[in-house]
Amino acid sequence: MRYKADEIERIVNRLVNKHGCSNPYYIAKENNIVVIKISLDKVYGFYKYIKRNKFIFINSDVDEQVQLLTCSHELGHAVLHPRENTIWLQSFTLFSTDRLEIEANLFALSLLRYYNKFDFFVLANLLKIPETFLNSVR
Image 1: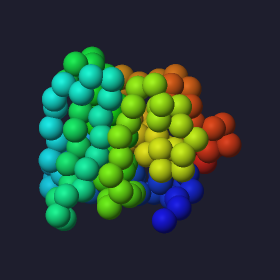
Image 2: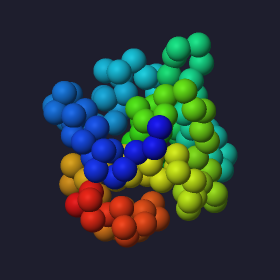
Image 3: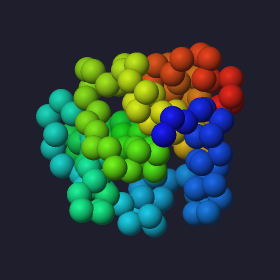
Image 4: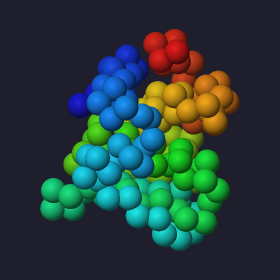
């Protein structure tokens, strides 16, 4: 399914309201998504769907903010694209124009805008979110 930015924003708002927070680790846990932190070399993280079970793998070697961003991005895949297995490479899909990656980035941006630790525009620039999508998320 293809998602527009405003649809992703509504999905994130529902999750935040349902769980009373925007912590991606907590939301994942409450939705029976297992989060595993391990060393992944040049990969930030990935999402895996195995026999009706959802897993998010996060690189334990990167700093906590990148781990939080990665968890948010991979949670986006788990929520928006639950049966698609994905890998988020530092040098490739972070700057991807692939629809699934853009949607997961928009999900992460929408979720992390609730966090005071992240500046909306800096995060949007880091995720390479096209400006046309930003107008409906702000």
